[in-house]
Length: 242
Ligand SMILES: [Zn+2]
Image (cartoon, rainbow, N blue to C red; front, side, top):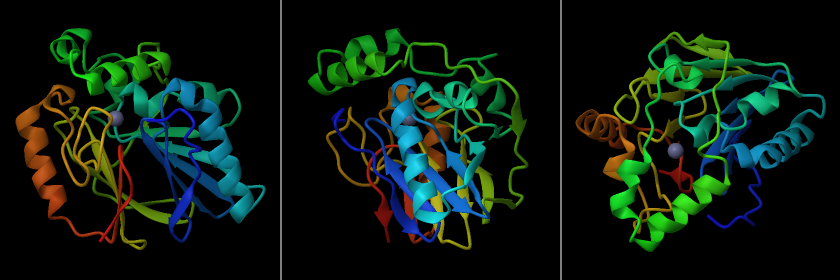
């Protein structure tokens, strides 16, 4: 969670670049002269997201343009830069139908101050809250004009076949993205490998307060643990290679 972490993209499969941000992760797919961003960090990560897009573009095709943003879920640490990015780039934003209201903020499914208060005596939670607030986590991150994704159907983004798959519980429409030809699974917050509030390393669930339906999130997590992919890219924590 160090604010000085450079957030440099790491190419985990050809044309699949993973960025471990200061407090949440994003992925950039490159191909066909375009870039696709999967999740977009906190509002304060804007320049890090921009610099990672530039780094991937210059490593692949200097003229590659950002044309699509895919959203695993509508929490502010995953959609925080999208509206600001739209002032600089022209792209479409995609989310699962059940997640669209959370991304547009017609509904809000996110941890509340009341959920966090009982845990604030723990230094890890206190540090995380401080970072979340400083990073713009309480600001307005609503995204307009979100295109609903066809779950289970494969669609090509920046030259990569992507299959959006429902993985609900963390939020009502949380989605994971399988890239079958790359043997990559982008899990968002349905399965993570670390979090500032957790003392554990390795595959884990986020703390119970973060899930809108804990029982459902547990079932989804169990399915994902068993799901084979050579490379797993979580919403928080480092890349997992199997
Ligand atoms: Zn998150």
